[in-house]
Image (cartoon, rainbow, N blue to C red; front, side, top):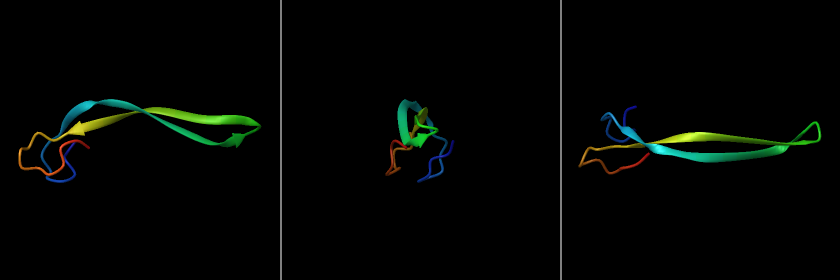
Amino acid sequence: MGCTSCGVVAHSHGRSDVTLVDAPCFDRPVGLIWRKRTWRCEEPSCPTKVH
């Protein structure tokens, strides 16, 4: 994965759970949870450190 700011190869910084709750479907609640990966740019001059 390339850094969106400077283009240097970014490294995994872990994951976080993201929960999306939507309108009911067939009278049942709809929810989606996914594990979103975050990225860290190790370029010292990059203004964005974590994506």
